[in-house]
Length: 135
Image (cartoon, rainbow, N blue to C red; front, side, top):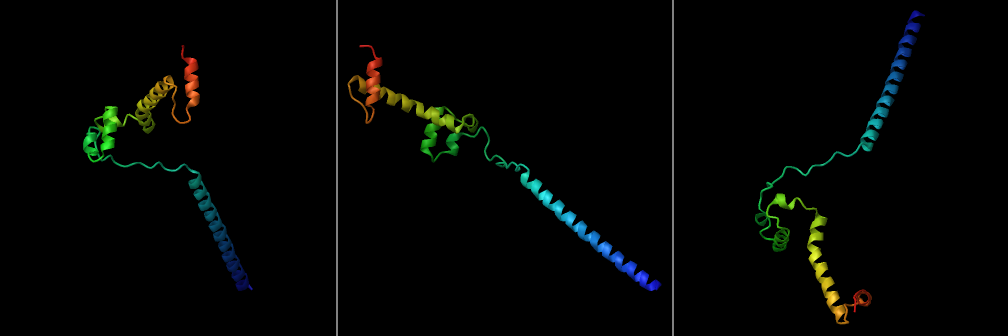
C-alpha cells in the first residue's frame, strides 16, 4: 500500500511539475508578445546618412564639373563650397532662382498693358492695371 501512495505522489508531483512548466511557457509567450508589442509601438530608430565623403571646404565646381546647370545655380547663389551651399534649403533655392523670372514676367505684363495688349488669358490684369494707373 505504501508503494501505491508513493507512486501516486510521484505521479501527482510529475503532473504538478508539468502544469508549472505549461504556465511558465504561457507566461514566457505572453512576455514575448508584450515585448514585441512594445517594440512595434516604440519610435523607430533614427537612420543616419553615414560618414561624410567630402569636406565642407570642397569646391562645388570640382564636385559638379559635368553639371553645367548646377554650376550656374551655384554661381547665381554665390556659393563656392559645400559649406556655402548647405546654408540653403531646397525651397529657398527655388524661390531665389524664380524671383527674377517672376519679376521679368510682371514687367512684360505691365509693358503690354501700357500698349493695350496682353498675354493669353490675361485681360483681367490689363483692366486692373489701367484702372490703378493714373491717367
